[in-house]
Amino acid sequence: MSLPGASAEAVRRHLDALTKPPGSLGHLEELAVRLGGLLGDPPPPLAPRVILVMAGDHGVTAGGVSRYPADVTRQMCLNMAAGGAAVNVLGRLVDARVVVVDVGVAGEAPVGAGVLHRRVRAGTRDLSREPALTPAEVDAALRTGTGMVEELRPRPGILVLGEMGIGNTTAAAALASALLGLDPVESAGPGTGVTVEGWRRKVRAIRAGVERLHAARAEAHRNGGEGPDDVAIPSPDRSLALDALAHCGGLEIAGLAGAAVEASRRRIPVVLDGFISSVAGLVASRLSPEVDPWLFASHLSAEPGHPAVLSALGLRPLLSLELRLGEGTGGALALPILEAAGAILREMATFDSAGVSGPSTEESSGEGA
Image 1 (spheres, rainbow, N blue to C red):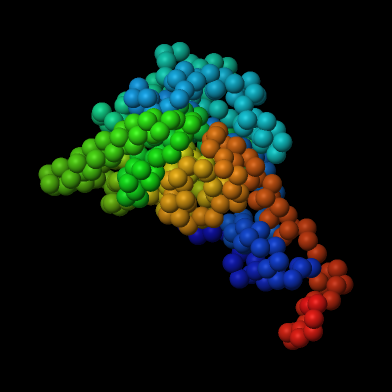
Image 2 (image 1 turned 60 degrees about the vertical axis):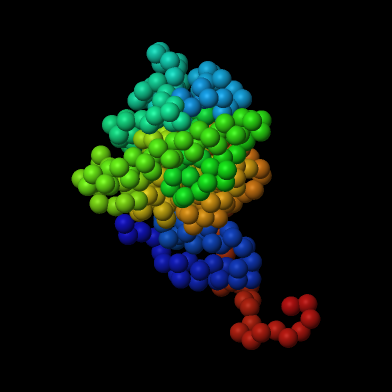
């Protein structure tokens, strides 16, 4: 995909012409270069702002990998719909609309008013015992994310990926291990604050799921293929990502991956929240590498697998606040920083326009320079 904006060199020349020493706004200038390359120099305001929260349950919670019961997913979706969750508070603060989508919440009935009902199935299967999803369910979840971006009106100027799902740090850690070759002890963290024994159960569950994935792929290879979808999928990265989603889940992660891919097609910048959202970004990248320039990392999570995921994506987080809530909270906090990067290009005066003397063409040798 060719980018419609200005070249990095042209944006840097613009930045260096502004009334400040070159590079003095640090990483904000690199963000400005990225936004200028994506959206033009100067980039338009990043509005409307949407936080897309995908929700789903995980069968692996039956193995004691979370402190909270699975019912909390449904309850928190209703809390978000009522405006009472942390993401709602922060969303209001930064003028971002929160959209909550049930792509896989457990139970027969729809969650309730204010939660969009796009359920593929009522939670995943237990990834420690069997594949969490069928290939058809993975495809449906990805298409749900794609469809949600298509549905959003008005079209977002920027999209934050958030999630809600008890047990989803286990699924995300399994995906990170599968896609990056991490040992589960490196990818699994405290999640909702499990005990040491709970963490050990999580590690065992992840290991079982990832080992089953590798065994299934090895068997498929011996039988002359790369998996059930290999006929239409030439890329090994894409094949592995789809197989990993099927074995590890989850529905909300697949939905977010689909949303990221579709947003990039529509030239909408995508802000990843924490570990789970970033794993969805990694899946999206493996499915469609064209998504990569459109991804921004909001923060560095307290989850131990997060640095490896961001490194694989080549992303630098904007904040490091030891957040591990999810929901899109870190993404909301990052929105003003991204907006500031664009505003500098739109609004800041140049040396010429302000009548301010620019830097000397010769290096100063005097003190106080």
